Image (cartoon, rainbow, N blue to C red; front, side):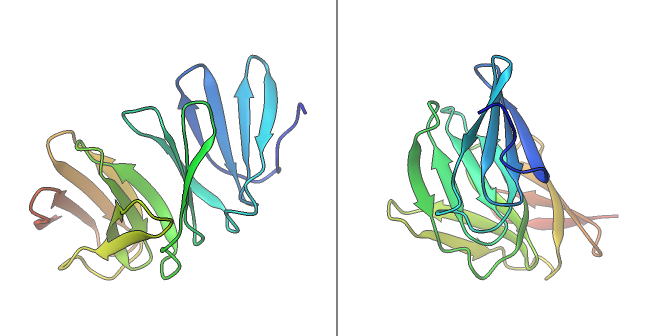
Length: 168
């Protein structure tokens, strides 16, 4: 099929293998490759919009939904895992740190995600971070993340120690 899964595009990722992935409001993904579009129908796994698409160091894709979990795909776009356990959060952004750990920006602050091999992941709010909506996470490549918020400014997070510094 040479069309989009939905007209509402929430995010995109220019990936390896000359693919561009588009995350949609309906939980599906459109994949542009070789001049055509294919659709990954994920609505039975992800029931909310896809807010971020990431690719890890191994080439796997992480489709981050706003409130229904994370779908992990291998390089060939086969589903590896569907991770639940994020129902208590509204996710707005996500990023891997330099050690390939996943961090989510939510309506309750910044959250570190740990995958435990089952279909449920563990999400931990970082203690000491203000309860506010995180709007952006940027990896600085030196074990720090810069975390922007909707109303509490910018923070630097040391991912090894979870130390937080407010940037004025």
